[in-house]
Length: 89
Image (cartoon, rainbow, N blue to C red):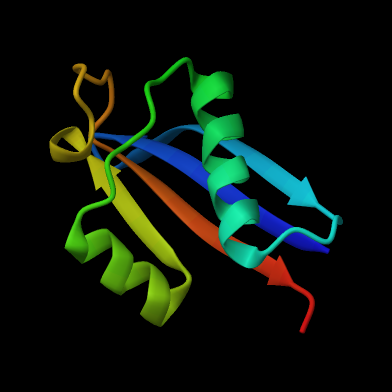
């Protein structure tokens, strides 16, 4: 089972969260992008742009944050944090 969690933060407080699960046989990358698409639908957001910082953080720690620099449209929160919370070996 693969699970990801997304949380929206405004002024240091969590103002929204969502979870994504995928038990299929897709690649890890496909699961991550499918999770982000699901989060964007849930929160009614455009997809964030992955900057080098995000790629590096995600590779090292299985989590990263997207702020206003990652979105083309304005966002009603300070940042969105995504994190892998479960992954089968």
